[in-house]
Amino acid sequence: MATEADPPRPTAIHPGVRLFLWVSKLITLIGILSLMVAACTLLAFGAIETGRYVILLVSPGDAQLTNRQMFLASIKLVDLVLLATVLQVVAFGLYSLFIDRGIPAPMWLRTSDFDGLRACLRMGC
Picture 1 (tube, rainbow, N blue to C red):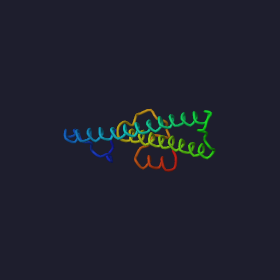
Picture 2: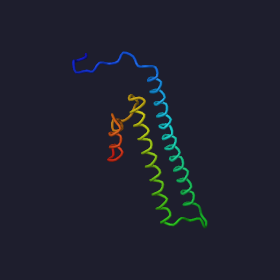
Picture 3: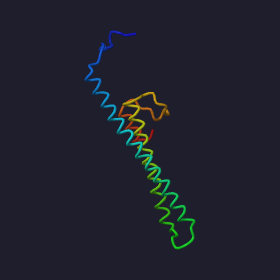
């Protein structure tokens, strides 16, 4: 039900504007897919590196790791997972902002504007 304070809605969008909006959504979607591919690549790389360090840790021979090397490797692996998680959160947030607001996502991941997404990343959702 419209009230007097509601602005009038246009009845039709010019085809050129509609094409521009479609192209901009497509370009945004390419960026979002790139973020997801980067996140998956980081997670796969982290899994491979974890396997490599486990094999080095349990294998007999000269290739034994020191405590310092294991500690640094663990920090690097945690950094990989955290970076991949940030990339996924940004990708989901951008998708929900620009493509489809109705994607199934937890409430803490839902944002209504770009500032909300930035605040979610800065302070933790």
